[in-house]
Image: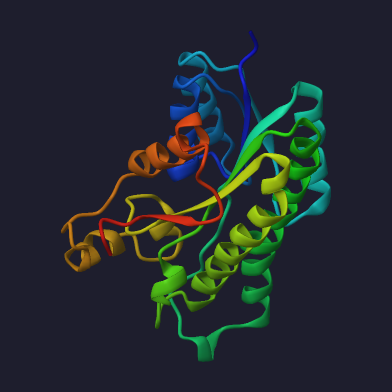
Length: 245
């Protein structure tokens, strides 16, 4: 019996990488996208292959429709798509709204919202005829916390994805598809360094009721449960993985 196929965007590091390795151990074959970190993607693919998964990587900026077309051409050449983990995302350096530029906002929404929505749309086109499939959108607790004086633009993109998750879920539920969001909180991943604040998670850990940061693997555990038959009646909402924050 063939293994189910999962596409993960932004899988070279952090939550995407953790999801890839865990999905491999749970029986999935994988297609992994990366934007710039080829070495990271190759390392993740090697770990997934060691866990038994047939794994392919492809460079793709999800903000580029042509790149997404190439990703889904690879999907079609590989087999039927069972799951999409919509994980690719970016954050900019901490700033106030008054200092945001059109260029930064355009890139933020192109990657975090438009790219993710287009990826989901392509996945739905392949899943609906089969009457099965799961889409997991990685959002953020920032969507309800707002991230004032830091990343209000990032928070706004993730709020958009929460609403998109609900709307898409309602559209495709009659066809047998499920769509869920997973909203991580303060997770130890490289995204903080990419935003210019590598110690951010540890510095803010005391604001979390559990008094600690989370790990990428803890987020991946939630994602893989939502993809499983154990979550067969769960759709249309966003699960916080935030330590209670």
